[in-house]
Length: 262
Image (tube, rainbow, N blue to C red; front, side):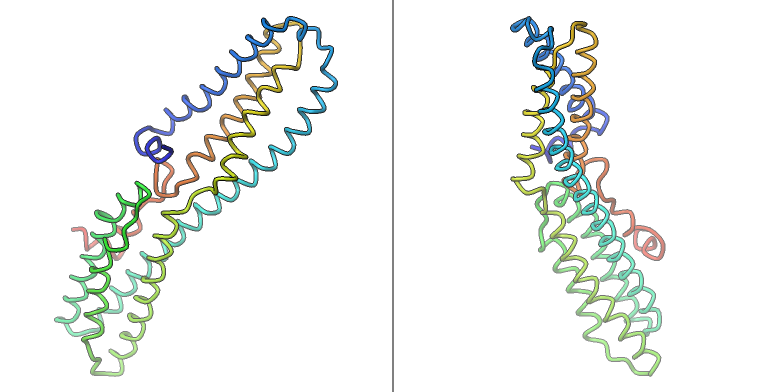
């Protein structure tokens, strides 16, 4: 469900739905509680409610902060993996310039096939949370095959061949790390704590009575808006390859690798 929302709606639309929806429901709930229990406006239970709100708010705030920092770190880590893979591919392309023209052409053809397989074939699958190892396995193996068939004839070629082989091994490692990141998501227990905590904390604000309706609704709406925005961050950061804030495949099409897209 989260993947479908991220891939079919803009961040602005999700903000309106999640944050706006949370605020509207909270205000409606507060008005219902005030009409159902008119005595709440007297604030006779405010001391107890205030202590409970403070305790729950502190615990829930720590949980949300931990979740958001974890997801943000995961997003940055995934961006680093993608950039590292693209950099290693660019280095393989540069190192192959020392090879004979026929071998260099074979390397270029194999690299072009792998890059297009990643961006055009595997990336849409990662956006759906269903990455396929087979989508790029053949094209990556094709690059390995070219290097494995070639035997350097000079010391210069041997040096660059060793560098290219080493970087290609790094590409294979980064590819696996990228595919693993595409399947990761927030553990169910943390999802329950993040979204279930809102269902506990927001209704508690209904019990904090104030004589003026506008002041109470402003209080409830402020708390609900803050919680709604935090939940929005959890939603958009949970999947690093889905939504507008997702990791971009741009590194595979920039710099040295740009010529493979001409």
